[in-house]
Length: 209
Image (cartoon, rainbow, N blue to C red):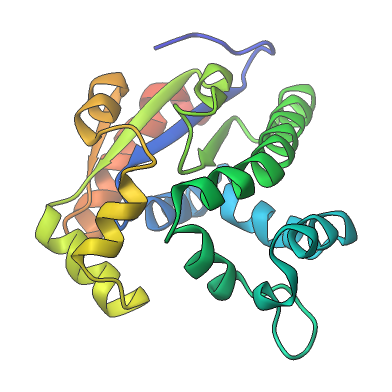
């Protein structure tokens, strides 16, 4: 563990894992157990609605990335950028600095407040963007490939090629697992996953302090 806490009593844990492994599900359990959760996807959704982001996207891709209501359409935008690495690089240049700055600001505020005792960061590019430096510990959400593929097929309609395209932009799973202080098995047994997370919380926040 990194021991990066700057305030007594505060701990930050970062969640690592492959697409479809269930990091958001795990983050939800941390929240149920009283942890603060910083959700990168929720932050992206907020930022996509800002005039600054909308203007940058429209300048790069025009009206094709927007719906009939004039709002930014994340599905249309994803279809554009994940079909061409150069286009995805452009979106990363627009979004990543804003998202990482927001997460860093939220962690700073959390450290200052001192409550709750634990904060979980749910961000897909924790290692790639350097956000891991904010964490006192990391947990890898482990899930069998067949289960991940089934979830992504059922919930998002993604086939193997789409999954491969998206994971190519992230650190390999073995690298994420090696970087983790804890492993959370999330193959489908909710109660087992919850008990696993309870043990991690108890380790990071002894006696519920």
